[in-house]
Each structure stands twice: as C-alpha cells, then as structure tokens.
Length: 311
Ligand SMILES: [Zn+2]
Image (cartoon, rainbow, N blue to C red):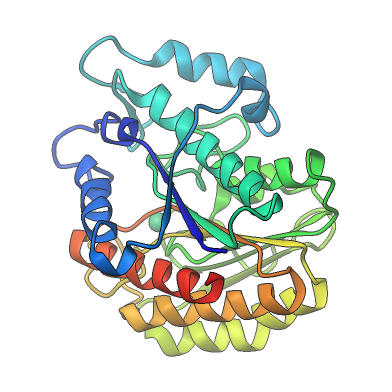
C-alpha cells in the first residue's frame, strides 16, 4: 500500500490575473518538490474530469451552468473581486473535483492507503450556489458525499486546517448529519465565518478560531483538546483533509505563524485517528498556501507523513 498523488496539467491552465496570490506558480512549486527523489515511491495518477453528476451532489445544475457560461474565450472573467476564470478554468476545476472523487474511490477500493490531490483552483470557500475566495466547486464536500452515497459509508470526517474558514464546506454540509466537519482558522480573517457557535443543523460542525499571531502551540492545543477527541468519538470510516498551507509564518495573506513541523504534526495526529478508527483511510486535497517556498515545504512535510503512514 502506498500514497497516491492526483494531479493534471490542466491545473496550470487556470490562469489568474497578474499579482493574484492563487497563481499557476503554486502548482509548479508543488510539482517541483514532489518530483524529488524522496517522493519516488508515490503512486502518481492523473486527476480525471469529474462527471457532471458528481458536481451535482453539492451544487445545483443552474449554478454549474452559470460558472460554465462565465468562462471567457480569452483573458479573464470575474465571479467576484477575488475569484476569476480563464479559458482553462472549467477543465481545471472539474479535474480538481475528479481528483478528489478518484482519490476516494482508490482509497475505498484498497488500491492505496491514502491520497493527496494537488490541483487548483481550491474548493473550500465555494458555497452551494456561490463561487468565492478563489474557489469554484466544493471539491472536498463533493468527495465526502461520494463516499457516503456511492460507497455507502455512514460516517465521514472532514478536517480543514487552511488558515481561512472553510465556509463553503460548512455551507454545503450544514444539513449533512453523516459528516463531521472540523475547522481551525485564523479569526478575524476572510471570510469572517467560523465562530464556535456555528455548529451545523445536527451539531456536527466544530469550529475552533485561532488568535492572530498565536503560532503552532495554540493550534496543537486546539487539536489535542477539541478536534482529535471529537474525531475519535465519531470513529469516522474515512477522513478527508482540506490541506491549506497559508497558516505558514511566511504566508502573505495571514499570520498564524505555523512552522513546517506544525503541518507535519497535524497531519500525523489526523493519521493517528485514521489508523485507530478509519482503517488508515485519508484523502487530502490542496486548498490555500501563497508563499511558494512555505507551500512547497508544507506540502512536502504533509505528503511525507502520508507516505510514512501509508507505507
Ligand atoms: Zn486559505
């Protein structure tokens, strides 16, 4: 058993306007680091195009059609002040969804121990009917629904350690009692949601806001005291991770000041729960991370832990 990485060159064809932090170079930096010799054992797979029906697990048809119709034939189109489309955006977004779905399928089939989806645009800010925060479709939420409705699971956990609150995942899964969604995020910060009192329709959502400048110690305490015990009590059959690396100290969009070791730590603790309760099944997908060096270091640390645990 090993770790699969799902990606596709179309992730380089979703082009954002000059100066935008969510840029093609992010995926180039990740590709470069994962090409290193210490990652030779990865099972590298192409992120397939998602079937329309997969996207429709979480978004209405008219929303998908609206995004598709907005894709320009050249230059850019903007869905909001942050969220832009280029001619290659639809394929990239559908392969982002498809990568997550394929990763769930591969892990559920026992082909690989765990998987990481290295694609962009990210997904955790995309609400049911609203693209926002660089995100078009709710990749992780769609794949969680796939695990429930296609694979017949009844308990799936989604853990989001991106520095921003996963408002889209929360919105899409607000009524979904079969999923526990846990998020740590800097507060105050974009998008402004994620207070502790936002608990979902079934009390199944756990939001733990973190203090600006707090560093890895407050994050580790939040996981040790709140999130990991909650996850263990839930005993998920599969754990999904929204892996954003913008809590890194060097990131220009936030200031939680996590180290690379903090990303390895949180990945390892999530894998502990997966080993104890989920048959080791973990599917992780890229969200944010806007300092290229910190992003590459964070992804490398994250994937190394997945490989160690899956090996
Ligand atoms: Zn983020």
